Image (cartoon, rainbow, N blue to C red):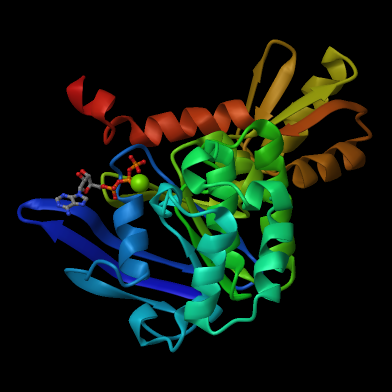
Amino acid sequence: MIQIEHLTKRYGQFTAVDDITFTVQPGTVVGFLGPNGAGKSTALRMVTGLTPPTSGRATVMGHAYRDLPNPGRHVGVMLDASAQHSGRTGREVLTIAALHMGLDKGQVVTALERVGLTDDEAGRRVGNYSLGMRQRLGLAAALLGDPQVLILDEPANGLDPQGIHWMRGLLRDFADGGGTVLLSSHLLTEVQVIADEIVMIGRGRIVAQGTTTDLVGARGTRVGAVDAAALDALATALRARDLDVTSSAGVLLVNAAPEVIGRVALEERVVLTELSAGGAGSLEEMFLELTAATSREGAAA
Ligand SMILES: Nc1ncnc2c1ncn2[C@@H]1O[C@H](COP(=O)(O)OP(=O)(O)OP(=O)(O)O)[C@@H](O)[C@H]1O
Ligand SMILES: [Mg+2]
């Protein structure tokens, strides 16, 4: 578990991270989402003990990161995948890290396998790695000590769609096995496919948080019915239950989860032709809205 309480970082007059509070429970992947300069990396550096907070605190498995004995065995961290020594091979980078953590060499092989780096790739110099290979190596380093918690800054950066799909599977399995994952991204589409919950920040402050499903659903569910009369009847029944219903172009937009609407439709014996949570487009809209006032472009406008 990761607990972040009133975490704040000021550089002179500038507040990079402003009173952030949230928890990451075991078994979940939380996506820390925000535009460039929002304060994501600064917050993750505070969580991992690299930057002291101005106020507030963060604990990992009940301890400040710095107080964890042999932290790599409990918390896998990847803050900057390009930070690896470029003259060493991937295997050397991991072997050195394994020595530091007191692990045996077998764990290097396991970590390489987990991230899908081949023997041949592991033998190449990191300086010659592609961006995606670097990310995989960074992830291998984070997984090396078989930790229960992962803290990853922009882990999907540079991965192709297949790579993102792969990472999603890896993090999902990690969380399903009881692991705790906190990752950051400035790309909504990435976070949306990977995270169970989203914490959105803009200019250091949390602007929205919740489950990915709720945040998508918050923008409404699209509902289509077999004909106009059926759609009207359904709209009336939904309004009678105090739900907000707007209709446009032959569909309804309702501020309720698909299941709620499905049940009303069943009671009203209306045949649905469409029932879908807001979808990527609407969460994107929300992301842009929420961050407009805090992003560079918004600030300039
Ligand atoms: N050591 C520092 N001194 C002064 N300002 C800093 C320092 N570190 C970070 N900042 C400022 O804090 C703000 C947040 O930076 P941070 O790197 O946390 O953003 P981010 O959300 O990770 O952005 P990105 O998506 O671009 O990685 C930026 O305005 C940055 O310039
Ligand atoms: Mg960053």
